[in-house]
Length: 325
Length: 285
Image (cartoon, rainbow over all chains, first blue to last red; front, side, top):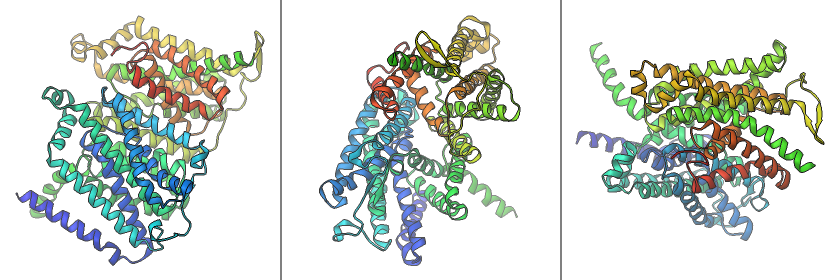
């Protein structure tokens, strides 16, 4: 009882903070950081459904992100439609691809799924770089100036911020509902021991498939949001491995398989990344990924539950020390 | 004649694929563990060769042995400091440990060696020879032949020697092996040393004949996945055949479709394999 009260209080505080952030920080730089934070939180929360809750570790989620990013600019470049009209196509493609990968690999151990996701993401990245229709290595460009409001090209960061926040709220609400339904219990059972879950009658393959499809759909939406804001996509920023890395590390740092873990991860990593990029300029990105690699190894070695499991152990100890002093 | 040249070139590169992939399959067979940094080990072997040549000098034999020794040490060290601890943890920790390691090694290599392609200074293996009407660079021929011999040697080590029997005993039943007086931890550390050493020497051999950059690691990891999936997880002999087949497929598709498509064809093969025959051509389920 007390715990749910505490959780609700934290969630309310977080919601209020996120709603008010761009009102308090009016500087475009800080608002841009806010939008980057929301996008990282959305992508990682989407990954979290299959990677965290179901325990099927995808290291190639950029394939869904990229499909969602290319679809809006493709319908714009081919038929002059508003980019936002491409979002359903991105979702449909992402779910189809999820089926192609999940169907064979979910019969096998989790390692096959991880290897397949890495290989397919790389395959699509190379292929997108050779295919003229999607702009090959150069990529696709969106409308330079919006023809009307429905092109969603705003000068200010503010509209993007609240659109992204709305999507994040929808995604977290979906995840929260899943957590307490039978589907959520099935997911946790599969993660704990798939063999035991199967023996108790959990339709493991179908449940994993549904988790992957849902995760793919939301990741695709994250890609669409990214491209609606930046108006540009190329094979590396859509399908590159670093896009997948970002999702994995944000979720794993905060706590994979927890509702607010990805948010906490993004809250730490996005300012960190912004800082290294500002301090070290262009060469900072390489340093950022060395740091990311190191953090991922340390999480795996010492704290696979991420910060969500570190806190409850650390806080009482600090509490005691403060009182002893 | 051009066709024959393409086929021979593909088989020679395929022998090197077989060598480093047999390291990946050894670890999978021993402990059901996939090393996502395996391609980075190959990449490190290449740079060890480069550093040895530029700082100490010496021929291909010297830097190949140096790369094998350095990577063997890295493999043993990694097993005792990292892998040993995550192997009994959740799947997330197992996959993230080597995936993070791959990023760490790749981007550190970018920082230290820059993103430019490099190649070894001409060694004793420079030049081409004409064999049965086709021209072959000596370096490719020697590297391919050496890789073939080493892969067969690894297979013999695992199947015909006491050490190999101990390794297989630990893979088969950890507790029973322990009762027979075998220390599983020592054997698994040895397996990691052999696996990384195979990758390192494969990298050094490849460096004699082909240019490279820090980004090749990811490609080699994926190629090793394809080879191991084709040959069957846990079978060194399987990865020997599969490595040769993958090298051949790459060379032929690069020749007929264009160089960009050679990796697309190979990764596509991986997905098709997962659908049709996940246990590999020679593997057990």
